[in-house]
Structures are given as C-alpha cells and as structure tokens.
Length: 371
Image 1 (cartoon, rainbow, N blue to C red):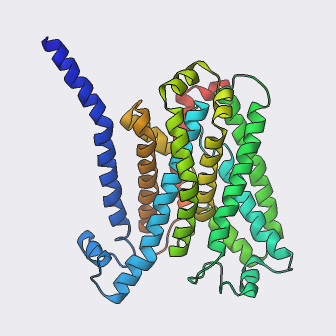
Image 2 (image 1 turned 90 degrees about the horizontal axis):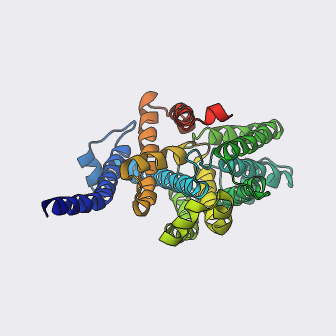
C-alpha cells in the first residue's frame, strides 16, 4: 500500500514538473528581457527601467527605452520564438534531431528571395533599392524612422521564399516512396543551402554600393534599429501563421497520430502534415526577413527544451519557444557588451555557438560515420 502511494506521488510530481519548468523559463525570459533594455550606452538598473516603462524618467530616457530598445527586444523575442517553434515542428515531422530551418535551407531560401526583391524590383526603374524608396516618397532611407511600407513587404517576401524553398525540399526528399534516413535529410538540406548561398554571393556583384551595404548588414544579422512598424509587421505574420502551427502541432500530438508516426515512415508524416510544415517554414522566413542570418536557434531551442521537459509532448513547443527567445536575448546582450558602444553581429555569435553544437550532435548520433 505504501509503495502504491509513493508511486502515485511520484507520477503526480512528474506530471507537474514540465509546468513548473515552463513557469521558471517564463520568469527567466521576463527578467532577461528587462535586463536587455537596461543594458547599452546608457545603462539603467532594473528598477529604473521598470519605472521608465511605466512613465517615469526623463524624456531622453523614455525615448531610449521605449522607442529604441523596447521594439528591438520584442523583435528579438519574436525571432527567437519563431525560429525555435519552426525547428521543433520540423524535428517532430522528420523525426530527426538535426533538422532546423537553417540546416534544411529554408532560411537561405528566404534570404535569396529578399535579395531578389531588393535588386530586381527597383531595377525595373533603373534605380537602386534605396533610391527607389526615395523616388516613391516612402522614406528617406531603408532604415527610416518614418512609417515605411517596406517593413511590411520584406516579411511577406521572406514568407514566400521560405514556403517555396520548403516545397523544393519536400520534392527533393519525398519524390520517391522510400523511408528517409537522417543522413539523406541532412545532405539534402546542405545541398540546397549551398546552392542558394552561391546564388546569393553571385547577386552581390550586380548591386549598387548602397544596396550591397544593406544586404551585407542584413545577412550577418546586424540590423539593430528596429521600430514599432517592424514589430507590427512581424506580429502580423505570427498572427496569421502561428495558429496554423499550434492547431497542426495539437493534431500531430494526439495519441492516434503519435502512434501512427511511430510505425510509419517520415514521408507519410510530412505528407499528412504538409500545411503545418509550410506554416513552420513561413514563420522562419518572416523571422529571417527581419532579423537576417541568425542561425541555429531552431536547432538549439528544441534540444535544450527537450532536455528540460523530456518527452512531454504538450509542453515541448511552448518551452522551445521560450528557450529560443532567451537564446536570442542573451546573445543580443552579449553582442552589446563585447565591443560597446558598437554591437557584434548576432549571426556571427550564433555561428560560434551553433556550429560546435551541431558537430557534437552529429557525432553523438553517429551521423558523421554514415556520411
């Protein structure tokens, strides 16, 4: 009798553990977010930052915290959430822990379409992209603080590029009725990524100097002057795509679907959840359009979340989202501290963190030996 009671208590504790972890991670996200908008050329304490957010402080302090840093924080949180959720969905669909939007070539595809947009649309009028915007009277520059329609166009282009690239990956992987191996998925993603990056490098030679500077800054994840228009543009993509992902993930985690996934091959799992796969790719594309070349969040976020909540299917997606947000916020804080008052590109820092981790996972899963 005593043994049964102990077992019951342990089961209840195990059931509560994922929710407790979620609450702790959420609290950590809030604290780090507050720290993020407190750190910079003008640093403030956490208490001072809170008071400024609620209307206290000087006009300059409110301008810096509310108008400059807060939009950047929200964008980074959304990028972390979007890339981590996209990575978690793709890992679940392919049953491959190495899958993420970057490794599958989806982020690169979104980047290629944005470069084509920057280069080809204005070329119809024989103008550079920056001059094209000025000619339309939209803004003084691409990074204008004015209301700028381009902030809404870039995420749309990014989503379109990501979805089309995801379809291309799908055709490469699933054109034959075979059970997919982790090696085949990895090599297909690498092939598409390399092909897209070669195309992107080639395009750099046909752009104006102004456009080249923008593209280079964007590619390394070094765009920092976000405003509220960019926040609303990214939020709009999330409002449209995230419900599709949540509903699709809920259906995929139902017992019947989970049992079928265990006995079925990866090809059928993707086919049955194609809309979910494309929506996850679209979210990644929107994040790339705004944040640029920020990689490995879709790999690291779900891996860390899986280590925290284990096999809890119900909590894996929300915890992955929060972990992704935490990763981007932490790296953003570090980037501002390393070479203050300048900022180190986020893309470089994530590459420094992500590449060794990817190699470690490949060795642990014995993917390297198969290649």
